[in-house]
Length: 421
Picture (tube, rainbow, N blue to C red):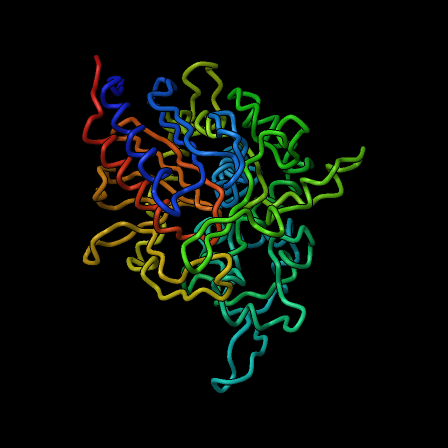
């Protein structure tokens, strides 16, 4: 098993502290790293729960996981694939479960000016949804989608059905990779096939078997008391608490008896949780679907291997497409989230990046990883038997200090990672 010596862990803590202490630095973050045995070889919180408030952040802090939710949704879908209740490549089955997908149209420019809706040339499959090639987008990265519903607008975090499931496609299915709401459709499909709300499915078949107690779509009062404040970095670099609070608000309001059924369970971005609980999932993926301590198996080894395999070799430069921000308050146009030399092909697994080549920080080829809008990141390196997360709550996505800190901490980790027989 891999481990860190105490001296090496101290160097990682010093690096995190350096970024917290900088002028206009990161207000607070938690970094948790686990090995294949499920041991937390690094588990550290630094900074404060909120900028300007004297409340130190601790390792039990709760974060809006944003798109880190997608990994859990993909696990749920692949469980149903294993059970033959879903197929990755059967559009007939998918349209039976979600007839809405049969009729969705494609938003395209007509004559280089007006926007119009056109019929699909191909049908959508579950594999397309999991690989972001089905044609859906996000209004904060697709200018046409942002304009489509003007002046009302589109808000994927409103909790309204229409903002997620009444959007048109922005590309023809199968013809392009574009990050979007496809994983929300996957979550809806899981609900309809299983007969359970997505949170109930997650708890019963994924989270409870792994002992991941602090992940949910509906935070308890105790979890909300540990919830990290959402922050905004101003154009001058200053950090402040976000004026309107958390972006995903509908699940944070005082619950009533029917709160579970009143909220929309967003498979693309709806979960809240702690870094420790999230790493229970990651250590299970390190072990080919078997939790190292509880002995619970949530996926078969061959399923995990399929999830980490590059699914879109036909798009080797998909992450290098120019995607200027349509909503600068949410995402920075200049962010490059794929740390690879430009001459290397890129890979995408079943809901996350899959490295075709080793990364500059030390990740092995085949590593899977993804991030969340409020500047969170997870990764699973099955070859080097290490996985981890770094979580913050800062908007817009692409915070330079967060990603520099993440890269430097990870580089130190791989430099000092040791093995024990």
